[in-house]
Image (tube, rainbow, N blue to C red; front, side, top):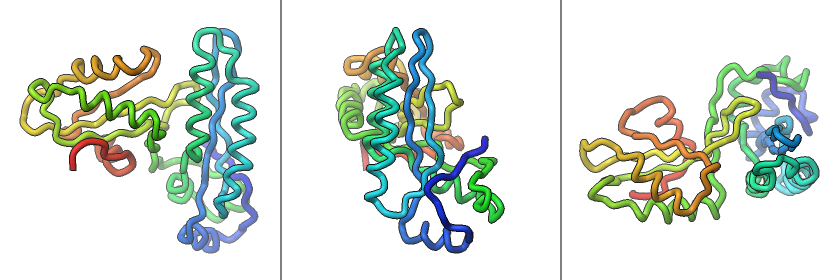
Length: 222
């Protein structure tokens, strides 16, 4: 996947790395295009943000596109449009590490980088949805699912036409089997069926489990 770079006037890779170390970042915003029976998820280029006040300009731009083109999906256009808005409202998706792990001096001059190695696959969940998910997790019967720790992240490493979805990773206090149906039952008391969740047993020690612990957020346990 090739990722275009925007809002950057630096031509020296070492200078760019110095700015990144001082807090600069690459942010990507999203928006929907509703076409009757199809809703397309689209992303901005990787926008270089050196000063925090620059975020507002791009946030407004992509929220306008989202509001203008997003709702016209017959089935759940307004819901998907609002989900895209919330990601932008919370600052977009930080893809700095993905850019920097792949970027070469030539890429910087061309303002386009091929993403061969993906680092960030999760972003943080917005505050309101996180609060609701925590509420659902707290309804868990610990005799059925003996929770020890719960991590939450929004999986954003999806294909062009796929929807980012929530991933909940759970570690248990004993060797019992993770009862995913029980967790889903509690989540559906707060979320519509079109909101997708993936529930993982973090004790599997898989690569995606490690990424969720690194890039997601601990919402239960210490």
